[in-house]
Image (tube, rainbow, N blue to C red; front, side, top):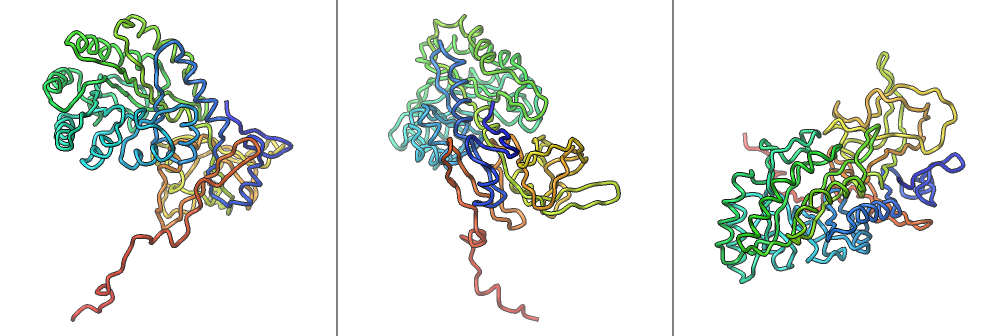
Length: 427
């Protein structure tokens, strides 16, 4: 469920007209619904009721400070993959002791910053990373809380770019290598083994692969406890899918029931469950607004050219991902054109939709691109020297610009032009 609906012929976000927001903020812009993200978080948390658990929101899905602050107020932790995300999460009020640090390429300065912040866990993805964490922790006189991210070689049945649990993926440590690495970690002087972790991919449409991935983890957790390791956490990752078009993803309630069935057998381990949802919280909590610039026909091909582009929303170009597109002004005419919705970027791959039925929208009309709350702004860029979009958060009848639209001056911030570039070349 989300809080975007037509009222009196116009699309609203909660109690506010998207037309009004676009008129005041301009386009393209992202609009997020506080009621939707809050509801999604609560539903996910309720699905885990009866199990000790911690929800660590996946910051990479949407890292806006107002979004993170809203989730912090709901009691969320954070799953981060960079020092920048650590900075954002702490600044937004998420306690460091609720932060887990994932990712295959943690750098020394990021590791030290996370240690000094006293985060909950490092999800370690390689032996080299474990050795570096031990080295830095020893150097600064601290102990590093770790879990190993185990790669179970389970096919999640999702797009190959967002699959993370197969042996040909860069993520995690193969099951047969994880135990020897745990044994090595047990002998380290500045490392505390606190958990075990697994994450097999994103936009998951089936529960079975998630459950299959847990079986080797739970067995390994039992072995660790038998060896006297004070294990506390079982991190099952995130990745639960959402509906973009006609998908039927499992509900959080179904997900919770299946987790309980698996983990009930191992209640004696006394582990706290960590989940890392991102898309399922934010995906359908946001839309991107864009104005129609022109109609163009090349033979039988009909293009609707809009002022948003692949630099604003990359997912269609990168994954051939589907995002619903509808006019902000409700159309009563059932006749629809089959169009490609494209942007101004100088790339044939710059599109938001191919061969899509769309109402007969006019130039200047406002469109809402749906399911844009996750991996929208966070994947945006300045390609073609386009300033990045504004972001707006709505709560009831209140709204605020939570990120200003970039200006052209922002495009050259940090650049310098040495005088010698202006000198003529010698003949």
